[in-house]
Image 1: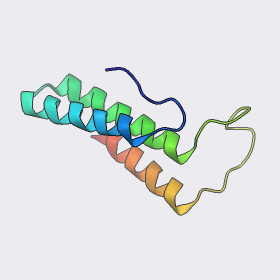
Image 2: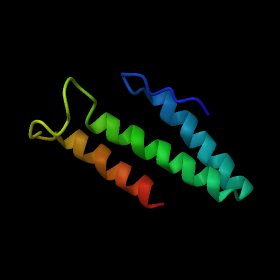
Image 3: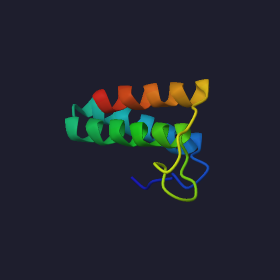
Image 4: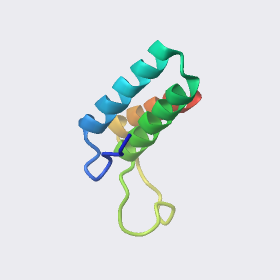
Length: 80
């Protein structure tokens, strides 16, 4: 499945991954499920902390409530 994750990380990509996850679950394909969960998690992380110039580790970030929610969602996808 092609990544649609070019900035901005739009909901179209995440919706495609959700559909892919649903198909994987319906077929009992745990590999597809894992791949879909990973893609959803990565995109949620990118929504929380979009890449910018320089290293993301160069500066300390203060995260907004939305960013924290996206990170929580990312962790949930990666845990499943």
